[in-house]
Amino acid sequence: MDTHALIQPLVAKNNTKIVMYVADGLGGLPQQPGGKTELETAHTPHLDKLARDGVCGLSIPVAPGIAPGSGPGHLGLFGYDPVKYLIGRGALEATGIGFELGPNDVAVRANFCTIDAKGNITDRRAGRIASEESAPLAIRLRQVKIAGVEIFVEPVKEHRFVIVFRGPGLGGDVLDTDPQATGVPPLDPVASNAGSQKTAEIAKEFVRQAKELLKGETKANCCTLRGFAAKPSLPTYEEVYGLKAAAIAVYPMYKGLARLVGMDILGSAKTLDEQIEVLKANWAKYDFFFIHFKYTDSTGEDGNFDAKVKRTEEYDAAVPKILELKPDVFISTGDHSTPSMLASHSWHPVPTLLWAKHCRTDACQSFGESECLRGGLGQFEAKHLMTLALANAGRLGKFGA
Image 1: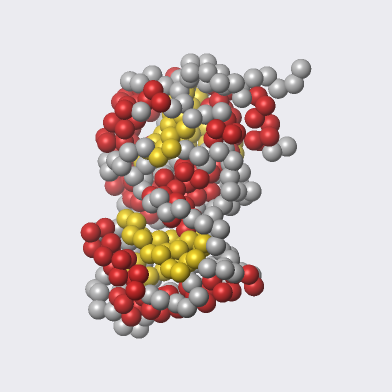
Image 2: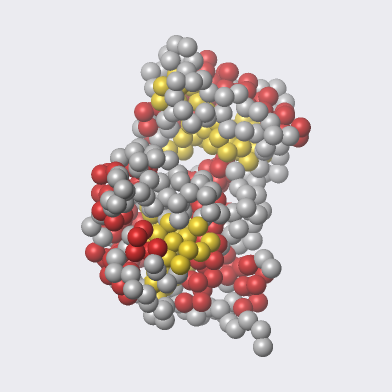
């Protein structure tokens, strides 16, 4: 039975508050056998206390051995089967900046990159170019013209921008052009089926014209295309869980995903402190809050163990400010693991902590991978986390007679 179909008739409304505090890419690996991970190395007194008072475990974002993207990883946390509800990153990015996708649209998440004289990529993210530099370049790409299709180009953040192709007969099944490596050229857009061939041809022409428009730029002189996607259709948090839900995030992609599942997007915070202030200002208005912290992921992707440790400590330091509001259920977890030694998303299960008045505590004394391995939640699929949150908030009735 579909989990949503199981939950819907059991939902009971009350005044409890649930906070899901997500450290993107939280899970890690030790730098040497027998060592500590980034989370275990970090000084996290507040999460450690909650681990002692709550219950811990390891969540599996999609399936054992599968390294998820951020979209599937967050969908699982939100209680949506990420295999059933497959959403392209382009749709998330476009929705996250407030672009209203239509039925004839295909959205693409694009990255500025740096190529050398031979056309090989030297930097996949154009040196993480500042938004102030990249935005005018994205706007410049609005000059691209292709017969039979309307094209929208919108700046996002740093090296990221969004392209939306609008026209009849466009499919969203096109492979990424990012080779995930340097020293090689960007890949050509390739359609996964006949229905997306037109989109692939348009995308190839877009890149050709973009290279001409960016010629002479020292950092962002080319682009790669990722996450081709049409607008998805998902049941909302209100429909499935009976929750009035809100998201507080900095990066557009996470706002986009939250919006697609019916969350209200609150504020325009740029820092974690500002996110907490937005939380406080809106505390009385919502039942569920998703707070997203990006930098445990980006430091992991950079392969910087020490920087990820510091960002994890920053994440922990905000916990008391959230607890001051007295949530009934507090969850700390990540959407996937991003070990700095791999410098990429990985398949490793993610440390997860749930604190609530009526949770059954376990023997965990701190919040880290090794402790969570022996926690009371065990290893579980992330899509069941919302069911646990609802139950601990007293928002689920009994199943059956």
